[in-house]
Every structure is written in structure tokens, then in C-alpha cells.
Length: 473
Image 1 (cartoon, helix red, strand yellow):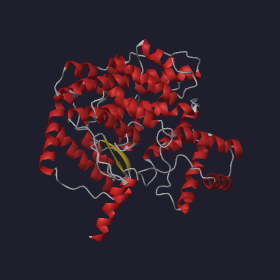
Image 2 (tube, rainbow, N blue to C red):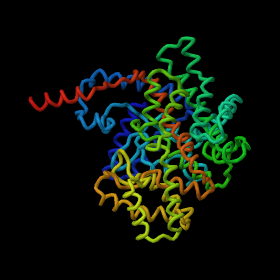
Image 3 (tube, rainbow, N blue to C red):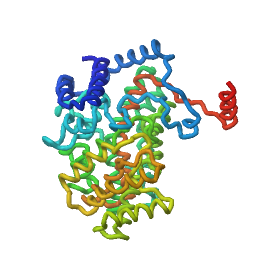
Image 4 (cartoon, rainbow, N blue to C red):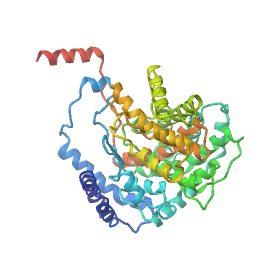
């Protein structure tokens, strides 16, 4: 079935899910979307011409359709709420959360192949879904796992580039430096320098993107082992999948930790295009920077405390609660501590979101994982109490549009339980995961020939004059 029809049906599936929550229908429909191709590149080569035609039709027939009005608040508020970016791989709804190619997180958990029956979804399966819009078979995912392992070779100079930094440098600084060092092998850069038709840009971009995704866990685990484990490297295991191998190379071979890593990488992979890291990657790539340069820029955005660094801040704050009040803190004590935090001018990390207006589904699936595997862990129980205590307080405060927990409110406690206790490192995990979404979209940016991004900026004088004209008209 052609991709145009597939995406149309995904839209109908999404509408059906919103109105009826009919998961059984989506399961039946998706089971009909299988393909005999094991090779991901071959599928893309088949899908891309159809999507190019689809985009041209939208531009030609509907290019002048208005999508809404821009207000001064939007201009001054960080372009919040403006519709101005094409991002095919995922869509974020304020009420129901993220959907990957039309599928919710519970649907992905049910439909995407796992390492074992009933297990957490394999990140390779989500990569396939984001790139093709189709749910892969277990055989296709296994083939992609092998391909990523085959691509996972990191040159010595990458390690040397990281080693040039002090061990005390932040893990994200070391990780970003490693990604920049990988850029020396960019296939897109080589092809562009030799001369390549614009219609073929997506092919070396595909090679760079899969190479980058494959190599990131090795670079990330090297940074971890260098900082926290005296530099002792654990090699890749050819018998393990992407998430399992990442856990293994970090030094965690517990089957439950490997399952957690599969879940973590899957749910953190993409969150539509407007967040800082995704948008930065897209913006830099629009200048025809290769995937390594684009993703390194995205990582620098992810490292900010208002974005990916938040998962570090949550665990540190939770541990500060325990240090001051003990593990058996009562609900009333916790309320007092939250108010004390807010009254001191600080925020309670892990709550609120720029788009979401309900509990983040990524928080919910992590909570379900904890209830299954570590229900009696004191820090998990504290997170559960925060879920009860914080939203009513933030609502009472009256300044927060979304008082509910986001993805960062839970991930650190799970990682801490299985021994990955170094909170400063958490954002690197986020970075490895986010590569799947950013690189998937970047391949489609090239395939669809999306242009250089260049929004219009204005001055305060311009805004004041515009508002005066509006008031007098």
C-alpha cells in the first residue's frame, strides 16, 4: 500500500483513537500494513517519491491557506503556539500527549516488537516506524539491529578528542565533542563536496544518520566509563539489541535494566519539532549542515536546564528532600517542603510542560514500569507522593498552566534504582535517544527538499507601531 494512503489511514486511526480509544481497531489495521522488505533503505527509496508528490500537491493546491493569526504574545513568548514547522515523525497533542506516526505510547508498547514477548518495545522498531510510517515485523527489527551493530565502529581519534577534555567537564560537553569528532566521516559532506543532485541528498543523509545513531551508544558509554568507572571500556555485544547493548556498555547487565533502557530510548526519541533540541537540529540542517553538525547543535540545546538537563535536576531535588526530611516523609511534610521550594523562588523540577496540559504519557508508562518492577523502592514511593501533592499546590498558586508531571519527573528514579546514580549523566541518555527522532526527520527534510529556515524578526518599535495602527483602524 502506498505511503500516501498509509499516512491518510494513520490520520483516521488517530481520530478514531481520540474519539473512541479503540485500540483493537488500530491493532487490526496495523497488522495489514506489513511489508516483505527487510531492508529499511529499500523501503524509503520506494516511499520518498510518493511523499515528494504529496508535498508538492499541498504546496500547489493549498499554499495560500491560512493556519491562524500571530499575536504579539506569541512573538514575545518564544514563538509559543505558532504553527510554522513541518515535522512528519511525531505530533504532540496538549491533552493526549505524543503520537509517533499516529500511534500513542501504549499502542507502540503493544505493537512494536520487543526483545521478548510482552517486553518493552525495541528502539530499532520505533526508528523503522518513524522513517516509514509502518509497524515493522520482528524479522525487520532484527535485521535493523544487526545493521546498526555493523555500523557501530568509532575511530580512535574520537576517543582522543574526548580525552583532550578534563574528566571534570560535564558529560554533555564530552558527549557533544565526541559527536563533532565523528563528523570527520560524514558521507553527506563527501558527497556534497564532489557534487550531488538535490534529489539525492537524502541518501548520504541516510548513511550519516544510521551511522550516527549506531555509534552514539559507544561514544556515550565511553564518556560514562571515563568519568565514573576509571575509563574501563566494555565492548559491544553482538547478541544484544540497541537498548540492551547500550545498557551493557554502560556496565549494567540486569535484564530489567536492559528493558528499562529499551523503554527509555523509545519514549524519549521524539517529541514533535518545536522543542529546543529538535528545532535546533532541523534549523541547522536546513543550511545543509550534515547530520553530525546538526545533531551536535541539537545536543547543545538539550543540555540547557529548561530542556534535557531537567532530568538531572529532578533526581537531585528528590534526593535533597530525602536528605532533609528522610525517606518516610509524610504527605504534610512534603507539602511544606514543596511550598518552601516555591516560596524561595525556585521551581519544583519535573512538573509542567510547554505544550501538554495533562500528565505526560511518558511519565505514565514509566510509572507502570515502576509499579511492575520496583513498587517498594522508597524514591519511587516519594515520586508517587509528589504526584498527589504537587499538582494541587501548583493549581492553587495559579501561575502554572500545566501542574502535572512530565517525563523528567520519573526517569531519574528508575535509573537510580538499577545503579545508574550519576544524575549529571542523565541528559546524555536523553541525547542518545533523541537522535532517533531528529535523524529520522532530517532524512525526510532532505527527501522532501525542505528549504533553509528563515523566519522574520521584528523590533519593539515595529511591534509598537503595528499595535498603534491596529488600535486606530
